[in-house]
Amino acid sequence: VAGVPESVLIANRGEIARRVIRTARRLGVRAIAVYSEADAGLPYVAEADEAVSIGPAPARDSYLNVPAILAAAKQTGARSIHPGYGFLAESADFARQVIDAGLTWIGPPPEAIDQMGDKIRARNLMAQAGVPVAAGTQDPVQDVDEALRLAGDIGYPVMVKAAAGGGGIGMSVALDPEQLRKGFETARSRAERFFASPAILLERYISSARHVEIQILGLADGQVIALGERDCSVQRRHQKVAEETPSPGVGADLRQRMFQAAIKAGEAVGYRGAGTVECLVDTQTGDFVFLEMNTRLQVEHPVTEMVTGIDLVEQQLLIADGAAVSFPAQSVKPNGCALELRVYAEDPVRFLPSPGTIAQWDEPAGPGVRVDAGYAAGNVVTPYYDPLLAKLVTHGATRDEALARAREAVAGFTITGLKTNLPFHADLLNSSQFGSGDYDTSVVSHLRP
Amino acid sequence: VGVAEIRAEMVANVWKVVAVEGDAVADGDTLVILESMKMEIPVLAESSGKLTTLAVGEGDVVQEGDLIAVIE
Image (cartoon, rainbow over all chains, first blue to last red; front, side, top):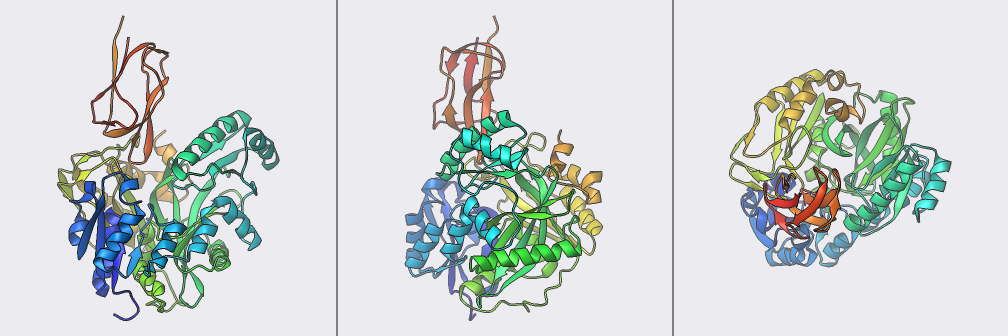
């Protein structure tokens, strides 16, 4: 097929590797998997056209092992590399090495990754571009004393974050100076350990907020378009558990303003390919602020695909090759509502990890039901990677229909041999707060006090 | 005098050993920090007493049910 690379190596694992392989197959693109010793038995390895072992289980020896991944690309004659999400997906350095090796990078320009990768730099850049940001620090906070002084100016409660961070790691809310002292030290040690950068920022905390993000696509001709929003307010430990589109908390006017801001954000960094602009919507004032931009495909991208009918991985491949997208860019009309539930290997009450061997795996199917799974019966879920087993996605003409399908699908999803959070999802779907659509980022803490 | 054994709740890597064998520890003190599936899981003393055994070292992999520490 003209306009897509001849082959793609997926520098990732589990459900997202399998997801990319599925689109590659449909487009006649040769799909090459890489895997660690721990993942040799996973479905994505068997489903790829070729698969290369890249090292031992720990991520630093395999999925973060750039020389091994580039060697696998060379060995298989791969023409492009798709990074998925996590691991090396937001490493500008990796993107540069891929490009320098003469391969097509399925992602934005490395400079855009750099500009958005540092939360302080991104915040300042967005403010300059006219995108609303929360009151906060414009430079890295040097020490606790400076943090206390700045927090006094910003006003409590404040959010403490690692500038290079993600996934909620090291993030905390401080209601007063004492909590700030504690939170600052924790954030700093986590930031150094996980992100190799001690830079910390403070931002005014919005006490009742919805987490709403906009999917954008930077087209090959330079135009940036918005494909809709996703509400990701259902979170535990600042990590998403369920997402839906459209957001029940966003009206037509706010949606248009958020789309315009997201397009500005993309244009400000010369964005190409799929990206996500994350925002917080203050439920009290109805205003929104920029939170961060994720310069990659998002875990929860399927809800956007379900309502638009657009295959986002296909668009990534087309744009990376300099081709036009497969749909009319100016007339995207979403249809109905979609919901994604992240099925994690964790106990459904305290949300603690639950590695183990999968004895039985029976997926639901039916109209409006999509399952993106990384595992099958007999697979071992190891402690080395994140706990995502599968994404259960449902679509309906209305929100009620999408939720009803989700309830049925959760009841029809059987995974045994380890604990999963499916019982939590059943509770979520039956809760009056989630059912009403009138919820914020505290919804999980109400369900699991 | 009671003896309390603390065991791993899940497969995990030992990220940090906080306490030292022989320490006097109080209920709720962090003894070690495990890491599993990108999450840090502090292992806490469930009683006060003397930490007579600390069975793990940083970098070890523990299986569910493995002994981590003994408090007397």
